[in-house]
Amino acid sequence: MLYDKLKEYNKSGIYPMHMPGHKRNGEFMPAGLPYDIDITEIQGFDDLHNQQGVLLEASKLAAELYGSREAFLLVNGTTVGILAAIGAHTKQGDKILAVSNCHWSTTNAAKLFGLEIVMLDCTVDSKTGVPCSVSPPAIEAALDKNPDIKMVVITSPTYEGVVCDIESIAGITHHNGAILLVDAAHGAHLGFSDFLPQSSITAGADIVVLSIHKTLPALTQCSLLHVCSQRIDVNAIKEMLYILQTSSPSYVLMASIDYCLRLIKSDSIKLFREYKQNLEQFYSDARNVKNLSLLYSLYGGKENQNRDFYTLDPGKIVIITKGTAINSAGLTDILRNRFKIEIERVYDDYIIALTSICDTKEGFKRLAAALCEIDTGL
Image (cartoon, rainbow, N blue to C red; front, side, top):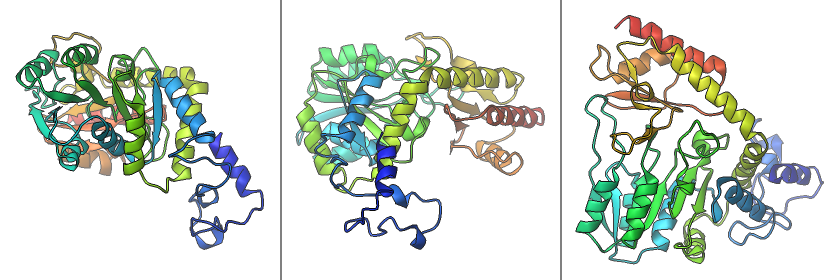
């Protein structure tokens, strides 16, 4: 794998008369940072923008694991994937449809490429304050009103783990001659366990971009762009990534992507089985929470396209404070200061704890116990 190849190269005795400037000399840098495997595009290590060797192998592995037509390594995060996907399939003046809870990379793409963005308001659940799934009828109505839309951009799963009915939305989108791009930044772990919602890659999307660093063991900025259908111009994607993605990609980040993919290939059954057990135990341990509530406990576990929440990712632990004697900021402070638990994100009516296959049983138990203790005082 790329990581092993980099480690072997570092031990080879070859002196680096090339970038990066640290020259893999650990005497000048703080311990713990991986300077020893940080190189540039030298002989034998492939080129991200013209893959023929070890990086091509990693890209092919990504496509194989996720079941996509083709995959691209991203070292500028999912943001660059969203920009590239939109830029590759639109021209100045075109319309795209997005939902109001979309990531700013979507609105920035519209600005960058001179596009008109039609924004679809996202319904919010009155009980929890959490944005609901985007309904297929809402997409259909927007496309009927704007038949010249070239691309539909959906976020699924959302930050809160809310998943949309991608299969139905894809059918509607394709019937109207548009392309479906799914921002699945928070869904890199989907598709590896029946316990989790279906991945958009196999549900009918044309392009899916996901951040493996968010929910899988990879370094920050590590993402993948998946081409899923024949509607997508692969060469246009390559050209746009060549324009937008750095010409000096980090081999540390690419090695992290490669290592993560190989880990999933070899150990996914065991890792996701344990993840399922940990999540099931957490929700069981937290079942006595009465004042606070958990989004998945309220609405999860059943797929029904007529519901406000089509389905939910149990790995996003959304803790609802709406209607309780504590606000979300106060709950976050207590978790941090009293229980030494740092939360991912704080909203007005809820907070989000992100989990992954790397979480420990102790970590889940600590959070459940903390919530139960806090809840008894409300």
